[in-house]
Length: 544
Image (cartoon, rainbow, N blue to C red; front, top):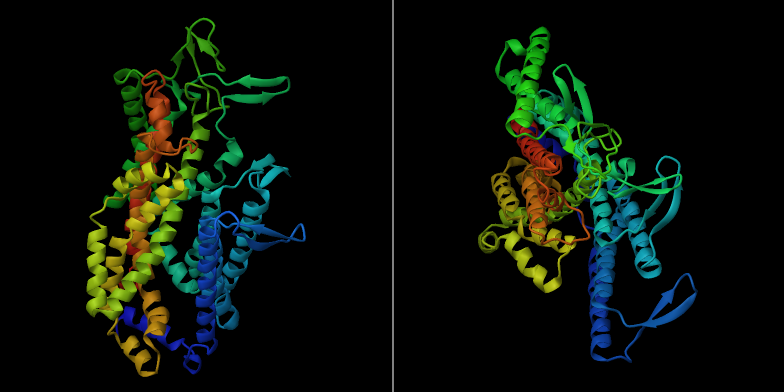
């Protein structure tokens, strides 16, 4: 028997067939859910049609009083989401508390706490900041007004941690196997490392380096940052800016990695060290020549009389400082801080959109592939029509109707970009719906819903995860392109917007757009390489 079939049968054997039936409370639960939804819709219709006098009572928990309010459509949507979460997740988990996985319990508790925190912020704190001057020993005083997209971002992080990373702990032996495969895949391993830097930088980078600002606080007040290039580094061939050195290092690393994958002698430790030194020196000289002699950028920027320079001035040329290692833009904002802010926006787009695409693609593809017939034809037909609508164009059109916002961008791309992943899941399900373990489960009395949930979904999760990972570069590039064209929310500092602003002073301030463009390109390349690596690492045909 093939290894993949043994894994499927192992999943089949772990099922407790004595408890295969759904709880009897399910019918009562869904009836109560329908009644609650009907009551919400009726209440909203009453307040909408009834005019200014139409109000509904609400309980102010903190004041201990009853308030009469007219709920808006957004209020009804939030309450409806809470009702769906209660009936579709909380009650089923409570009824089957001993049978559900630990990560599901943790998710339920944390998601409920997050929902309560959001309700408190939305109904009681707004427009006051969520965290106002909270003392933190390492980072000083935290002032953070959490807005809508960030609440969704935190929820997406929770979903990712519990249902993507959490699955790694279900079968530790298989997780170790995946890690060994990734370790033996050098390109994928280093792509994973840069993706980890992207995630950590987007999540916590600005907590370390601070937010982009044109001034800094001093003992006597505030001091304005000056326009400066990257920090200088002394080398045997002369002073070099930090960015040129890093660029040479990245190119040299890519060359050495390619040689390591293709040349047997390079894999020897001595041969690897010699190759790294030779390639590093030659690459540094070539990059330095291209930057300084061919492009005429230089490690310093010209400074005239009366112009401020935070670093050393030599021959009317201003050098950078290590306080802003990657330099500052034309108004004195740190490029490193702009980089991490841009990473944060790209991370929010990538993660939230993926968390929208992943469940939709999985559920739709599984249902279409398993049921077949007219349902399959209708769903695949809809996917064909949906894929003819460019999400980029749809966002531009809708932004003129609803206004420019990061949430609208995420919603449009999340709802219009799952078709390709759903098709892959459907193909995988069509191959597995007549497999032996599915036939055995059906013969044992399992209904179609339980078969899809318990036996089909676990075997197609790797496919949809790989597919969604490969679509993340497109999402990041689309968000950067929209910001570059000034079609984004101007209050959101995106990589695309920072690159466009840097080009306004190019080539005088050559480092701003160059550094941010390279960082964006590396993010896109790393996600693409990581997607290819995951396709190989998660392939069940490679099981031993």
